[in-house]
Length: 264
Ligand SMILES: [Zn+2]
Image 1 (cartoon, rainbow, N blue to C red):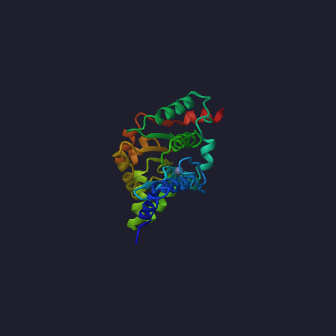
Image 2 (cartoon, helix red, strand yellow):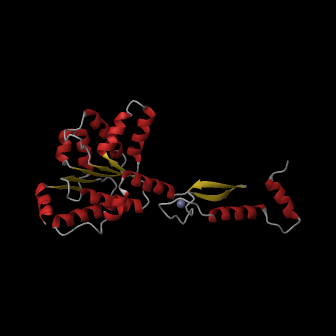
């Protein structure tokens, strides 16, 4: 039996019909023109189908569009509850009435284009804009198309520990945290009771930070009520890695500053 390609080639010899290649091209173009129904982000490349078609040899093949990791990020952000914050917690809306706030914003802006080998850390009391500035940073990376993961430490650590004995689930969760291009850990080492993290918490933290420490391209944004000094006291291996990477971009808002901020 003749293949479709052979049939077309034969017919083309004695007619003015489309060559098989032209036929393929038209088919491919039509497929690329069709509009999909993916929401959250309007992609001109795949027209919200998630796939881009091209001709390979005698057939039309599909590849996943580059917008898919971004869509994943948006979905994750939505799921995490950060979504509503992405619109409100931007650099534009960050308060800069006080000098320390100006410093906070400028430090974050400088970090955006200096992430190789550097992490961003903001420590201090609740209410000094830590989450706002970290969200603004992650929002910018998302806009730049980087897949990002928002991790609320106290929530996620429970799920990770629950799966410690299930190798495949544990591996999948940890694999993502260790390799995602942008990881934002909110409220690192926060515990329900305000006590120090357990040995199991520290072990998981080490696994994540050590992997990210070893790949200078990975972007890590951390907020915590604890200072770097506190982290070093909790665990030197974890604390020293964070200290090393955040030397340039570490903001620990003291209680006095917070007081000023609140008294305004
Ligand atoms: Zn796309």
